[in-house]
Amino acid sequence: MSEAPAVVPHPVTAFPPPGEMPRDLPDLLGRLVRRAPDAVAVLDKGPGGETVPVTRGELWRRTAALAEELRGHGVGAGDCVAVWLPNWSDALAWQFAVAARGAHVIGINTRYNVDEVAHVLDRARPVLLVIAHDFHGLDLAGRLRDAVAKAAAPAPAVAVVAGPGRAAPDPAPYDAGSGAWAPGDTADPPPLPASDPDDLVVAFTTSGSTGMPKLAAHRGTGVLAHAVADAATIGIDDGDPVLCALPLSGVFGYNTATAALAAGATCVFQPAFDAEQVLDDMARLGVTHVVGGDDLVLRLQQAWTARPRDLSSWRWWGVADFQGRSRELAAWARDEFGTSTSGVYGSSELFALTSFWPHDEPEPGRWAGGGRVVHTGIEVRVADPAGDEPLPPGREGELQFRGPNVVDGYLGDDAARARAFTADGWFHSGDLGTIVDDGVFAYVCRMGDALRLRGFLVDPSEIEIRLAAHPDVHTAKVVGVPGPDGATVAVGFVVAEDGRVLSPEALRTWCADGMARFKVPASVHVIEEMPTTSGTNGRKIRAATLREWASDLTRDAP
Image (cartoon, rainbow, N blue to C red; front, side, top):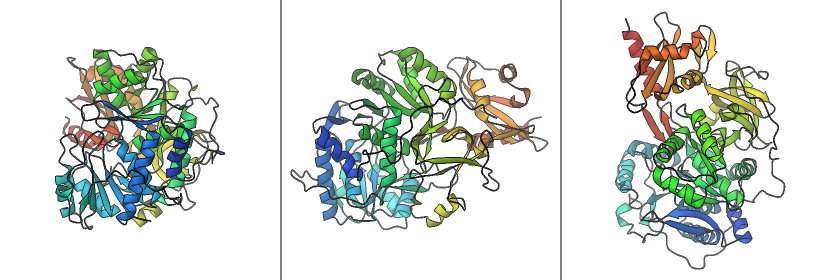
């Protein structure tokens, strides 16, 4: 069992935050405009990589103009609008404008293939799809036509967006069967109408670890409460430059951007991730906050080592551990820049940044997943997976949640919501964890990833951390498969640092020198690279693929 970090009390945001809750999503932006219309809300990237500032007032005007165009095109209450854009300020304007019409957005990752887009079309049934013109050399128009041909849903109308600093394109080549248009420039749009915050406003694709992803939808009340609470508990200040490198179509990128806006900070958008460019921007703009997986910061570390920059403004990193490198990277950021790192927890169904460890929590416990929920409206318990009976603090079980952060429905799959909840109304996270204190929990692993080794329940990350601590190991992943006698055995996979040679038996000895014998992998295999999947929240190692390899290797072993 993983050892839970000790709890250090810290302020937690009351729910709803007194006097701070915007009426609806457009009001979140409206309050910023009334306070300082000329303050910069977003730093976009222009065609040549130049920084393009977007003021709060400009973002408000564009949002109002879009809402009026949406009205003219018949988009209204309950409709879905698919937004297939990179991290441009346009994506924010579309989110606010769609919400003002009582409709909701489903974000589409620019890396999605034809089958994934067709799945979104069938489940979400968007009446309009917003597409990026000529982005990064991608043939999004071709993918859309192929997806429409595969999907059973009617073809959506298409709105074509050029992007920051670019001329409006001809929309005709993007017509997928229901017409296409390009947003205009309304000089004096009418005021944004008030919307119902209880309406759905956004949906995110789930990880899709089993079959095609579900589309987890949330109401405006949950989005607003979460944005305000995240801003307060993280400690984002007015004017802080916040790195927004993860796609807004995913929950981690979306929650980071909305938290930044709620605080009056500046979103530093990265439409395509280039480690050198990101580091240059962080140093030049004085970025204070970063949210992302260890995969993202590993690329930053490697680029920084080759050419160091001054990142002393970097105050906080909210880390999700995808590749087992969080601890060493947190130590690097602390030692080089004084950065405080906290492990975070979240998902498409529960929002990202649902919890994180307090800033004064001791290391290395603060670098693990879990933490304190960000506001008092979020409830968490641990229950026995077999019968959903609540378990006392310290006992491992399934993490279950209630509150406004919890998914309100699944687009195109009404039955999925019923399956996702217990009889008494708690959401099944599918994650293993322990309660540490009221509203505080330690994340262990996905329930399907936990290993039962010689009768003991073991978090595979314990073994991964030990393997990754070897000076010649770049990345490590551990999976469990049935051994010759049917009992689960741990199998490790490692990628060597460039130019290093690894001995599998030496790595097993390395593990035995630092952990209990029953945790030592039955075998360790050195591979050239990990099988990965690139999702909206980061690059994750495909554990299912490794389990297939491990099964074959274990079966074929003499």
